[in-house]
Length: 533
Image (tube, rainbow, N blue to C red; front, side):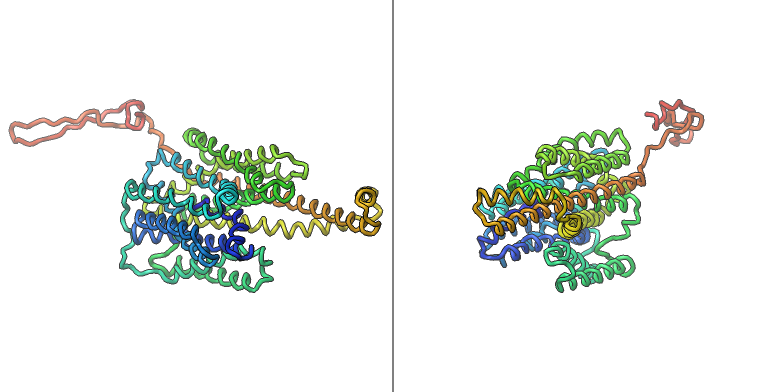
């Protein structure tokens, strides 16, 4: 439900703006406020769990998320809605990383792959279903139900976790010094960065004073934060030294770029089908749904494959499958059929299924259990940043690259081209014959149709550029999978050097009444040693 809320309100913004008497641009703060609050709490959740206990923090997060969802649903105006969305983001920000830490600690190693598989299903499925569910609820029940929907699940989650989740010990005593400088750096650095990513293209990036100031504050705060956490703080908010572990570092790099590509693709396909192919909002959302259901089927299969195939091979194969799907999507045209887009999305989802769970398992494979809370916070931070930067990047490309392609296409159009004269003359004749327009009016309208077609062709070329970028990201990322460290089982030593205790028995010395133990060492065949068994 927390991941769902990052995207479920997108399609409801026109309804919210109209109902609360605000502009569409003002209603965008309903999204931005949630993401900013989420970004601030997400990396600090491990530190908070260490101070008050993981279970207590998790229950507080669920309670705050559920209660603020109720108040979002009854908000009388936009100001109140934005305020309660901030509280909802603060409550929801602690749920994702804490969930991963719980899974890593509670499940034994032989079952952790299955646990992360179930977790991966909901993490990938939620943002896909968000726009579809949000659109349906807004059309049929009203936009307030996108928030009321959280309440029954929140209540159930609170009481089930209170009864079933084991207690954890407090890592940092309550009397220990609070890292105020670290908290300030996280709030300013990540909060401003999330604002810049979310509002940058809408405000024309650094042409906007607000975006420029926030970017400077974010850069300075994050630089100071990294230095302070590494060299000055005794109880750091972000335990950046965990990145010294090779598996954890590679997993964070991989999850950053894979979520960059995944969320960028999830943004591009509905925009393409809705804006270029004139699909309805619901049909545009349904383009993503088959891929998500295929993911549900593939992830359990991947769990079985993880027991028999090297995890690095699974990750590499998944990235190559994803690269191929982006390559096919980079050849889209305005005549593409709905089924073709769905097939490419299914292909992408099957690739994601191959590497998502193995990366999560390898991220925690060499960390001590006491570090799982802090590690989950960093892991969630990289995933969140990858998603935000991926969406922001493709939205910027759709505007900037379209201008570049339009200039290039326009420079190659001359009045002497036979196809151009034909494309101009055909609508001109129709407008004069059947529309009753004068020659000058029909000529202007015919030129307008040519200009519209020019814009469409420039835009489709831009979508091809975006998918090509995602393809190269996946290709360049695939060799990283080979650098993960896999702990292998030790092979039994040669039989000539293996000794085992064949029997041990006690006998009573009647003379001195002392208990003695005699051990007999004997060479055993390999199959009878403990390692062999």
